[in-house]
Image (tube, rainbow, N blue to C red; front, top):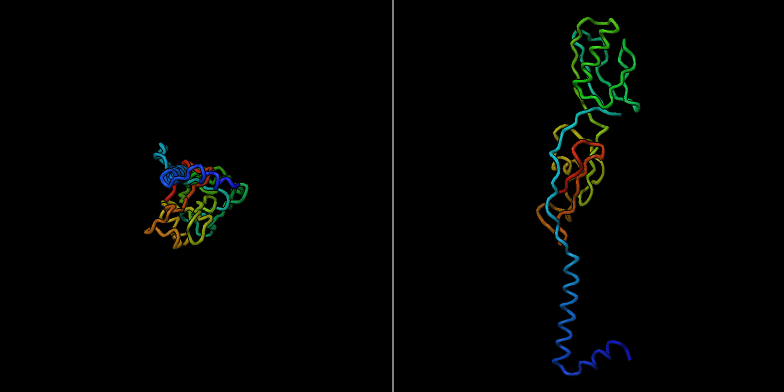
Amino acid sequence: MPVYSQFRIAFNSSRGFVTARIAGLALIALALSGCAGRPGPPLNLPAPVQSTTVGPGDVFTVVVVGEKELPTEFRVQPDGTIDFPYIDRVTVSNLEPQDIVVLLKKRLVEAKVLQAPQVMVIVKQYNSKKVTVIGSVTKPGNVAWTEGMGIVDAISQAGWFTPIGDSNHRGRRGLAVVVVAPAGDSTGGGCSA
């Protein structure tokens, strides 16, 4: 005799069977409610610190006042250097733009190319800094970080939400998009929307 029919025989009266069935359903509902866990309290993370250091693949413009013949656009090589006219190879990886200005001025004076150079550095593209957008967006993956970028900017560059992850309509599981800052970034990790 199957287990189910033995169970039914044990609770032959209709009242006992209904009570056992309700108790069984309550037990199943209680077990399933544990699967719908709620998110915990917000994490106590340190305030983000913006890092504008350059790295391999980044592109920046260097303007030396009065020197129109010098190239202006430079891409940081995989080894973290650029080749600057008259002073050869310069290591710029992990330097802020203002630190690159100081370094270039110093090297131009040391090489006796200029006596008091006026140098300006403007980063055009941070290719070494990527933000990963995963989940219910049109184009999940890496997005190039730009100075001042926020979560909405990253989601927008990822093609915005899909109909399933639409920001105005939460499904049974809620919004499923995560924006993650690079592990080596000083912002301290990622955030989710």
